[in-house]
Image (cartoon, rainbow over all chains, first blue to last red; front, side):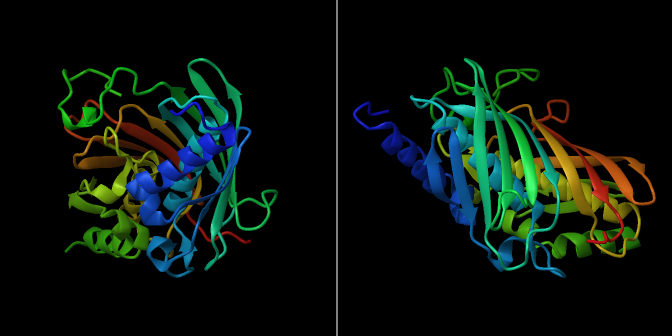
Length: 166
Length: 139
C-alpha cells in the first residue's frame, strides 16, 4: 500500500475498497460512515429484498451477520498501520431484538486487541443508539491469511482432500 | 408434495434474503440439504475469489431455520437467539451445501448445528451452532 498516504487516508481507501470491491457488500449497499483508531461504523440501507420475515418487514438476521462481519474486518484494518490480508476465524452473535422495520441498520466494531497472528473484535448493530443494540458480536480474525496465495488462488482445486486450504 | 416439502418451500420462499443470495433446498425423506449456487454477488474477497463469510453465516442460519420448519409445523418463523460460526476453509467459487442437525427441541428453544461444505462432505468450509426461539416472544 502507498506509504505516502496518511493513516486516515489509508483506512478510508481500505473501507472504500472493501465496500465497492466486495460484490456482496456492494449488493447490500454497505457504506462506511467512520473509520479510524481501531473503530469502524458501517451502515446497510433498508430495502425489501433483504428482509428476513415478510410478516414483520424486519431485515434478515443474515444481513446483520454480514454487516457485523464486514464492519469487524474494517475495524481490524483500522487498528493496523499497514494493510495485511485477514480472514474471519470465529464469529459469535447474540440477537437481542428484531431490527425496526423500514430502518437502516448500523454496525459499530472495535478491534480491542491485536497480536501478531490474530485480532479480537467486539461489535454491535443498532438503528440509533449503540447502547440499545439489535445484536452484539464477538469476532476473531486471522492476520496475513492470504500469505503465499496469489490472486485467483481459489480458482484452482485444493491439492489434497484433507488440506486445510485457507 | 409432502407436508414437509410444502413447509420447506413456504419458509424459503418467504425469506426475501434467501432469494437475494440464491439459496434453495432439497428434501430426501426427512433429510434436508440446503444449496447455495455460486454467483458473483456472494463474493466477499474478489482477489482469491472467496465467498463472503457473512453470506456463509446467513446461509447456515437459514438452513437451521428451514430444518426447524421441516421438522415440525410452526406457527411462525423461529427467531434466532444466538449463533456461533466457525470458519474452516475459504469458500471457493463453487456450489456450497449445508445440512442441519437439530440437537434438541424444547418447548420454546431449539439447539441446532449446521455444517457447510463444497466438494467434499468430509472437508467442511464452515460450521454454525445456534439457539432459536420457537414461540413468539413477549417484547
